[in-house]
Image (cartoon, rainbow, N blue to C red; front, side, top):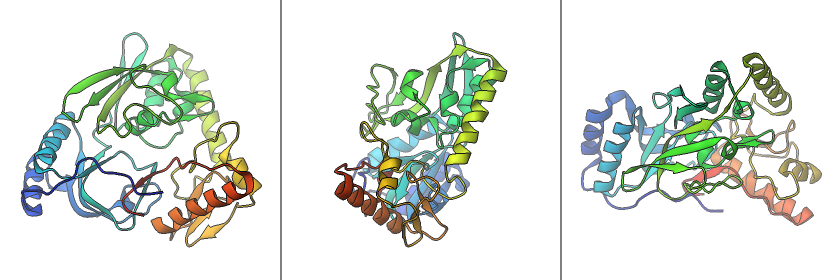
Length: 318
């Protein structure tokens, strides 16, 4: 496995100090962070420093920043709430753009639609729907992370996937044009969509839901989250399910079958509670986690003939 590619490459014309000054004029000082530890922005709680991290609160800010990055030919990496990321201990060059708090509005529209900005949590989108008397998003209420990342990877749980409820997705293209993609145009499949690797940025998504009983929907939401808490190691930093589900099987069952529960490298461990999770015991490095992912894949392949595919997105050099 190799590190993920960044969007754009090149050499900046401005110095870093000049770039910082320009970004501060758009975002204010507290949202322009130099040499920012990525461990502060990932649910694994690991990762080296971002050369420059910008926290974006609005679409116009995103467009302005991308205009500058394009002109300067600077590499950039887009993140949300860091729930599905493993960032290299070596950090990330260029600029990291974070869409999260402030880019997180959820609103109910006519016709059973709930629109959520890319930085909104799936939990908040689900609860917004329930409070509006709409049902169909309960399965996603406990999935960690944000709407943008969830839609991009067609996140799912408990028999549901976001493709089942997405009506349309608003996207900012690499040419900085806003377009609306229908469900069909998103070309959803298992943990994939047309947006992945395209250089486009999801701005938000609308979910088509059905009228439902608020109390029943909330009960479903609470029951699913109770199941999640009972079965998953939520008290340790992780990125959720580490591996995609192989066809006709389950990653956790295969890992358990290979007697890997509890296996540890450095501060990283295959969870004793749920074999599908690799967790940070508290002092793991990204390298520990990466090596454990590789070891699990190797052992499962050797003993079962099935090669597990990581669900976690790698950023940086490994």
